[in-house]
Image (cartoon, rainbow, N blue to C red; front, side):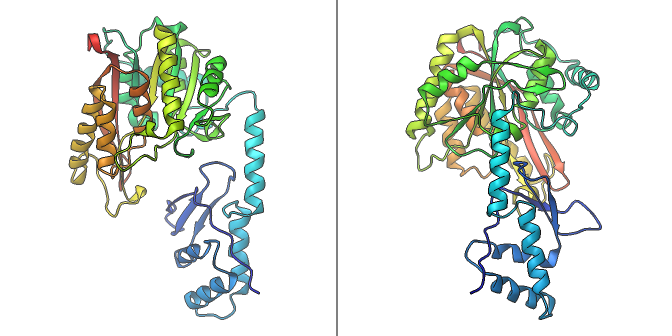
Length: 405
């Protein structure tokens, strides 16, 4: 009886090969269970669809015979299966072992390590300080009371204007506050919030964790909370905010990081109609009321993701062609955010079936429910070509109490 083919993992990154002399499909693991990167040659890409947990090696053999025109494909079958498995890209015992090892290592680690230092921003602390100072230079101060800000989570190099405008609004005297950082959880489970008691470590030092507030939230909404969520180990949406906070307030700034998973609500329902989500949003609102002025809020959010990199059948150019209409839709949603209108914002997101692929929607909605009555001001809106065919949009937003907005 032919052996079954394991399922190809659905939580991998797939993109066209960036290597000119090696065309094909590049596969890598955003969870970093595996350090491998594979480039599948164009003729073999269609074979990946056979790794669905239902086909067998006979199906793969037949496909390769058709593709190559050669009956002697036994070694190629073995090589393809072995390569995918050893890379940790199949749902088999190799992947299970890698995943278990990484989760255990993160749980036991004393700090959340700086995953993106040296790639998205400088790993050398002195160079990083200069980079951040240059990034924030030239912004005018915001003179009204500030509850929080929203900044991008794109590479600081790509979004530095918005980082500057957002972080310039934070009060220099807020050094003793706890900063609740609501980040987008790109890889976490839907309707879940990832928490960690660990300090965030960066080249600038370790933050001070708000462990007692983590426990408070976990106790009141246990069904929605993933404690010591491994997604923190690989996620950038919080890490990018932390380096700016450390630059402004010192390495030991007190941070409560929350990764907000996507919300599965649809059909006219709101996220809190899912009971676990509702309990967490209520707990976060209670925390905001109890802590009052001792809290500041930072949201790490991007907006639309358009173009070939994100599964669209067209090339996107910032503020050109189709991206003009995207800007109009982005701004309609941002108007609801500025008004503090959580329900109106969510109706726009779900009513459009989120064709814009906003990855900051859950963090924005979480904040609007946690701090009702807030008002926002969009300081800057930008679109950036992350590659030649794909665009990310983002904004800098400052949030103030309704009475002074």
